[in-house]
Image (cartoon, rainbow, N blue to C red; front, side):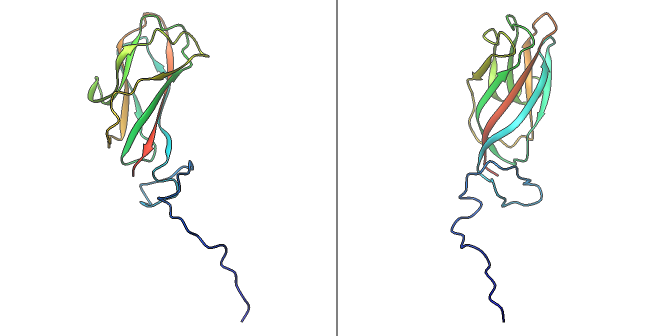
Length: 151
């Protein structure tokens, strides 16, 4: 019988490796990348010229803790707008980032790391960028939500 090498010995499990590769927790509950710090949701081109919500589906995480929200790529200087990130529409549910002025976001090359109001474990499968004060002129903004996938 020929000798077959099964490969190197493995001393870690998917839950002990903090990797950044994408995972699909809906079909495989213990996957590579579980518990990793990663991008959880994104809204590109969120309209900040009108009151209301932009939905951001959570990417492959059943439970998570938000660590950081990044606001960037403002189409114009957002001198009047105010927005936040919530777990329900109309600024409902948990305030992940409370509605606050976006005045420091003055153009497309500016990156703002917003203060996160809630880091508790969340299970909402959609987050919402809520514009509480409109800019008053055509304006958009990109919003990135980063955190720990606790699925």
